[in-house]
Image (cartoon, rainbow over all chains, first blue to last red; front, side):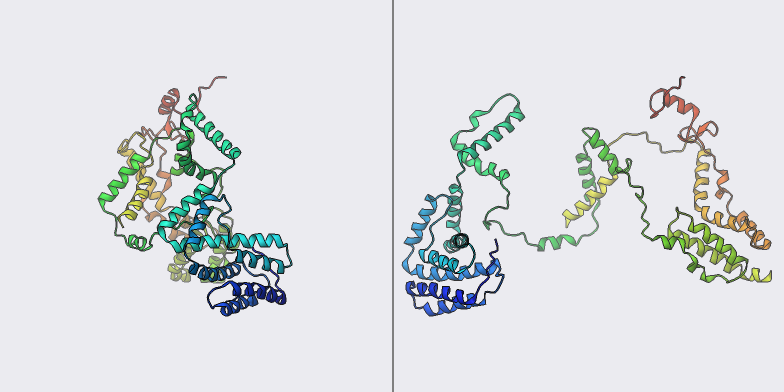
Length: 343
Length: 128
């Protein structure tokens, strides 16, 4: 959600000064002035219709500063926060109180719904905290975090009941007779939930886990340089085609096969199927320009004009064929020129 | 490289062998007369345009008569089998020159044989 931040610079500067004073007081390292400068610069650059990305960048800079301060305190707090992730449900770990105060200050400065903006900011801060956490700890802990997060998602018993019932109904349809109640033992239920839940939610929901790397495009380019396929390749391909082309199971598949072969027309019937005349109507009718090679007067011209009249009324020939027709006559009359002049 | 070549070959092969359907395989024409008829049809197709144009010059009241006589000679010089008049609509299965229905290209005997065995779509014994 892109927040529409109409910033009045004065308000922002006062709010930023409040937050920067808090930051400066709490930071243990001597980076107070530089952080204040940075914040001021950032907020000073804010204009009407600040994009979502810029806001994220701001929050990131703020958080990196918080990280720098927290590092000094040690890893215990982070370990404590990790435990909290396993305990809490859906909300995630609690944010740094300084960030919360900063967010509330910013929200109060803005003219829009304060609580809404504050909650949005806090949500984003939470997400960024988690990402920075992951990046810090490295590979092994990532998996732990992922699994802990997965365990955290608890559905309401009503939802669970709905999903179970849907699954039961599916399995009943397959069997028709047995109910298969043994399957729903509590041990197997959780493990299957992760596999079965996938069709209920879209696959693209949630954060990227960065487990897989993108396939390199080099192999694709190497494949493109092909020499003509050998006889063995062709034979193999024919074999595969013969095996995979199973006889049609029903009338629909038979009709599909016939349509592919060309035996059956495609419905709804296209009157111009197979006919590719891209030319406009005027090219068919106004053929006088092709008569330039002929003499202006005389029986030959008269004859050719009749020919053109007939061609313009012909819907069956393409323009190429009509031009060829006229050119043939041109050639013929040129060959007979001396003969014509004797007459 | 091999995979893409295989893919191309697969697609080509699929078009060549659409389905393993067993039909009657006729590798020869029924008799020599049918073969000659086939040759005449091919030649007639080749020379069709030329014959049409020369005939357009001949069957004319505008062009001078001398020109039309020259065109007469030209059309007579074309191969004899190129004229469509020499084509005979023979039965496709038995090469019978007479008693052939145009719609099915079959002689009356073959037509009756298939119709009785219910192998002609939409054909029924008439009774009224």
